[in-house]
Each structure stands twice: as structure tokens, then as C-alpha cells.
Amino acid sequence: MLSLVIAQQLKEAGLSWNVAKNDYFIVPDRGLDDNIYVISDMTVMVEKLSGALAVTFHGAVEWALDHVEVADLVWIPREDQLRALLEQHLIGVPEPSLVLISTADGYRCEIQFREQFLAFEAFGAGDAYGQALLYILLQSQDSMA
Image (cartoon, rainbow, N blue to C red; front, side):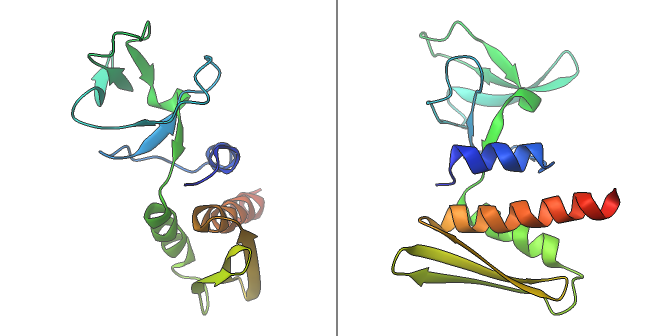
């Protein structure tokens, strides 16, 4: 699973979240940072409240919180979602490539981006993909500035 630090950095870099069933997220800055939640049909659902997209909690008696706006949450993309996002961001880049390699210490994500060969190493595949995606998002911000 993607580390919470990288998930927060991705959010700050502008990664958008199209909320879907089975997505993981945290509720930061409310004493719940250590709890990972999942969108499901049972207790955590996405609804529109007062015109804003919100995550609502149903049937969870321990919650004094009944909803939180999606903008206040931190999405924790799964490995497959991170790879798909990387592939989307590499479309249109001359000679794009994306490779995940298992190493003795974890994983290395290699990308060809803007005619540069880049490698991102991490213990988990999600973090390696996450670091690569973060790099691309930050580079895209810099080129727009």
C-alpha cells in the first residue's frame, strides 16, 4: 500500500480523485490519521450534501462524525491505480516507457519522461509508482509556472 506521506504529497501536488468503490483514504487532522478507510456500499459512501461531494459514514456507532467532504480527505491510490495514472500522464511524451522491477531491497519504477530516464526505488511497489507519479506532477506544475 502507498505510504501516507506520499499520498499526502500527491494530493498537495494536485492529484485529483475520482472517488470510486473500494478506494482507500484517511481523514487527516482529526485524530484519525492512523485509520485507513475504504469506500463501500455498507458504512462509508459517497454522497452529494448541500451541493458538495462528501463521504458519509452510516452505521458506525463510534463516529461522532457523520460526513467529511472529499476535499478534506487524502486518497491512498492502490498499486493498479497508480500505474494507470502514470500511464495516463505519460501519454503524448516522446518514447514513454514504464517498467516496474523487483530488486533485492524492494522495487524500482523506471520511466522515460521528457527524454530523461528516471528510476524511483522503494520498499513497496506502490511507493515506487507513487514517487514516479509525484515527480511527473511536480514537473508538470513547474512547466506551467
